[in-house]
Length: 427
Image (cartoon, rainbow, N blue to C red; front, side, top):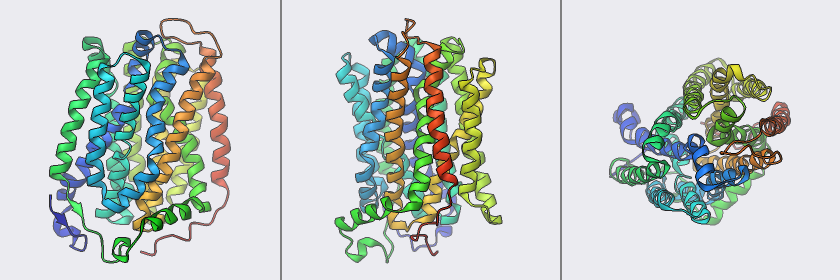
């Protein structure tokens, strides 16, 4: 695919063309990433039963995706800013395809963990590549909207990983699901190579200023020493980590063990959860896009969303099981609010740092998701398992209360006044 120089008027290219050749292909990558992330929530009981897993082992097998995902974020940000999202995406998708294939044929716990690790590494760039491409091709003030469009693909991935996965697993088993995913991932890598254009760097870009690799890591140190970055990062890594832990795994067992739902009912409830997220991503993104015009910043929307998300989590911890589907919808809707921080960071930092600052934030979220998802399982394991892949409801309650307390402390930090980064863009 040829290079389309950015100094060409984007409007002459048309937004429809950019949606077709940039946003949609990268969006499909995020669809795949989210599908891989959440697929285990519906098949958790099958995995635990077939492989005789404790809650902690189930948490480890699922969350190892997060730690490999997180570990690659720092070099990912550097290579995205250096080589562009298209080239990076192609290579990583092929790694994910290999991991999915191995997962579909493996029997040992070690190989399954290795395969899940390769999947996590392979899809670690899907969202970051998409956000980098959005920052390159679309107006900076419209990033909340265009990023929300990209995030929508992720919610469809989460939606697909509910009832369709439950039906497929019932008919063909969970291994066939990962074999199909391997084929789909290879196809997406080919599509990425053929359809997505490269973006030529602007005349004042770091590359044209003999921007060295050492300068890239200097930018990283600047980001990590920025107080404004940490103001955003703490709430995002804790709230986002809890949200991912429950969406990707523990909401399903809670619905089965605490709310007493069957596997079919769990799939239906998780569908509602992810529909809530879909509506939240679109709705909150549109709201944020509009209210910026009247002087209300994105950070205010994030604060409001976190408060409402915590309210729904508290009701879940209080075991209002008769409202399980409503609570799933609410948690899904408001839990997506911290996704706005990527647009906020994209508006705050210079264009040559967007890849690095987004991946720096993403790394922290996924480290948190790994620790929390595994830690929640470890807390649940403090009470004897009930057999057949089921765990004690008391363990679920204690685990959720524990993470809610952490989120409340992070929210208090978010409320503290902090000057916006000196790196704020002038444009």
